[in-house]
Amino acid sequence: MQQLPPFPGSRQAPPQPAAWVVHGLSLRHACDEDLPWLQILYSQSREAELAPVPWPPAVKAAFLESQFALQHRHFVQGGTSDAWWIVCQKNADGMVQAIGRLYLAQGAHTVTVVDICLLGAYQSQGLGSALLRHVLADAAQAGKAVSLHVAHGNTGALQLYQRLGFSVQEDMGSHLRMQWLRPAAGAALR
Image 1 (spheres, rainbow, N blue to C red):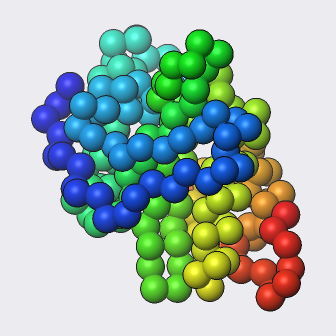
Image 2: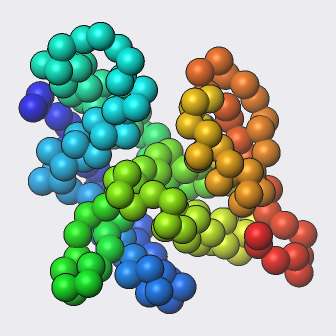
């Protein structure tokens, strides 16, 4: 693995809402020892996209390593995030294991979901919804909007974001910029 810049110091404690207990979810700060696992998570998240590409496995692996390194550098050196969290879940044996990542950036008026990614085996189980509902509730309490980007081809994520009340603000070519506006006082989150 390429030499990667370290994660900056965390600026906020990871939340642990009671609603996550039913899912066995928790968050912890990402650390440099997580980088090999995060690269695996990143690579797995792009498998379907690269499946039709006729490259040998070694070339795909090198490409994904390079892309992960570029993304990580952009995130940590570009100041795009201030919350670097590993999503964990307690399994049936009581062991806590990493299953994804959630990176957030707090702005004056907007919380940006820089990245949310779960291992494939943990998708479509309501876990991403549970994570995002908490982000939305926190943003609503702080009087902030929530924004994110989603790739055009990521239809599952796009549908989830639309169900949660995000709307498309801009088509950026390969991605859509979406935003969730806090509900009016007294309105419930979806």
